[in-house]
Length: 154
Image (tube, rainbow, N blue to C red; front, side, top):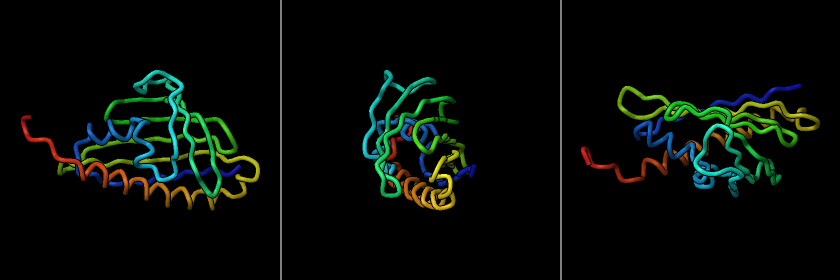
């Protein structure tokens, strides 16, 4: 079986708590993920370990609906979700760290093992996923950096 493991990074010129809070809130996913069309909560808000959220996405010409479960949550540091559904069980991990100049380094990692026909297409899927992740992180960066900066001490 072929594993897909794609990791992308960007530096967002905003404080880590702000970037982490926005990125780890599933309600914001349709704003910054190009392929995600809708989000439905199957658990009460906010996201905690065990929370289940259903996403509908368009990827490689197909509409996919899958439910992610939050498996790890370390506020402002790490957020992990997994799905075992469909032809492509996957784990998505976000991590955040401070840069020397007060910005945030965000890493987005998608890892999984496609089965059946999709397993044969793993290299194509990885390349498409890498392009999508770069576009998504670029969009996230634009959204957060275009927000007004809070006043110091306010």
